[in-house]
Amino acid sequence: MRSKIQVLFVLVFSVCFIQIAVKENKNESAVVESCFVPGSCTIFAASFGSTVLYGNNEDYRIPKTYYWAEPSGENIYGGVFLGFDNFFPQGGINEKGLAFDFNALPEAPLNPHNELPDRGDIMKKLYQTCATVEEAIALAKKYNWGSSIRWQVLLADATGDAVVVSAGPDGELAFTRKPEGDGYLVSTNFNRANPENTYRGGYPCWRYNKAVEMLEKIKSEKDLTVDCFKSILDACHVEGPVGNTLYSNVFDLKNGVIYLYHWHQFYETAVLKVADEIAKKQSPTRIKDLFSKETVKRAEDEYQKYKEKKSSADKCDSRGVW
Image 1 (tube, rainbow, N blue to C red):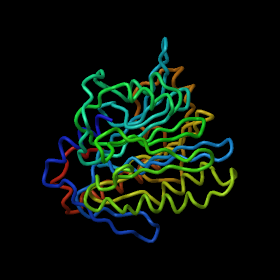
Image 2 (image 1 turned 180 degrees about the vertical axis):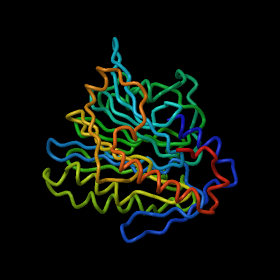
Image 3 (image 1 turned 90 degrees about the vertical axis):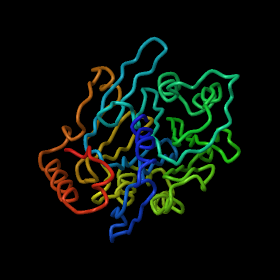
Image 4 (image 1 turned 90 degrees about the horizontal axis):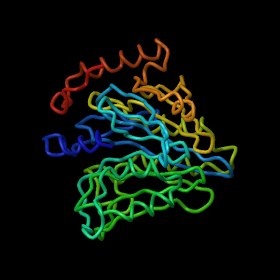
């Protein structure tokens, strides 16, 4: 989370804030032609029958990505998390199957509630102490979220429930819920409760529309598979000189399984079990270390190709080192 918030504090005030233009290629992915919308991730959750899946594309410029685990403790749930080299979770799943990930947004005002305690690290509170979306919503309402936020978060749980938490148009915290029962919920880089809260070019969003189009084709539990989610992530991935889908993940929320993909290369999958990673207290490890030398080499070659291109990316970020 902090990395995406840092992106907003550092980049939103720079000359390359909110300039984005994309063009779809024949595979429905996008090549980013101007400065990258910070934290422009595609996130979705779906349930059908007894199957509950959660998908995310992590889109940004810094290729050093990691996974790690936090152990369980007294009244604390352990979990497995994904992110960058500051080790603030960009997303993750706890041992009960509560998953989360963030979309960056322009700053949106909130009405302070000074009668309540400050939220502090609210996401840590949620993933350490909540097993369900209902519990997370109830806990979120107990805190003062301050005068503004610059992101929204999609939470989903093993029961099939899901919600996007964001700033509402009235300045109150908004909860955009997945329909009860079978169905899905999607978030990209426009506020689900207030679409005017977006970056220029962020609404309507081609990634959101593509994800919805593909999720609408799920008509039975047998259609809701990891391969189905992988195909959606592939269709919504981005690549170019100023930003790429650095990793993608599918979480099986009922079975506690993580499927990871490196650098929008969906032909090789790394599989992790949440319980196993928590038990061994997995220390921060490069995501690329889970993949074959061939997959890593292809990713490195593509990164270098884009890095060498003359573009406005040179003005946006200097941390892009493999």
